[in-house]
Length: 178
Image (cartoon, rainbow, N blue to C red; front, side, top):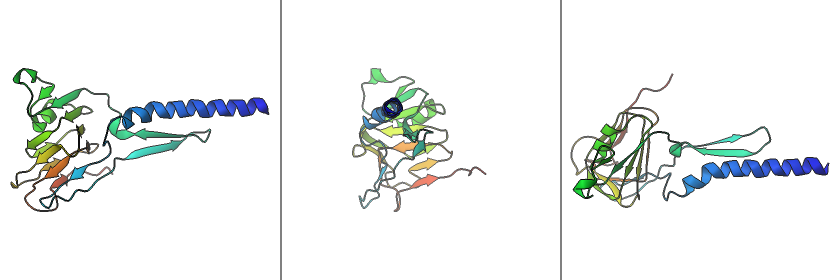
């Protein structure tokens, strides 16, 4: 009986260690899981990332944050870097980062105000450095500030502001899976 209790304790410890391997790297990123949107009235709302939990046969639980399981390359976006910094994976605009990325890649956006309208047409992870300072500004122009046309896109840690009319113009346009 004592040996079985010891084995169960060991299983729980191993399961906890496995869970920590997935959870700790995600927890290290401040603001992961939030998506700040700011219309002209400067109100901010949040949208939480999808997190999947599964229960193993030994009744331990694993949490997988789908937002951070990437296998592709990372494209870095910085609107005010030194001109020598820019290349294929280090770009000036979010649109350029999306253009240079392939499905499964991450577009990491450093703090700054990005005056652009973006269309996400491939499966990407687009993450801002800090939701208060990584800003997509629509400049009150016509059109959608952010338009997503495919499934499996994760956009997090941004403020979106100055759409032509409230609410903030984030358009999700894709074909549902039947």
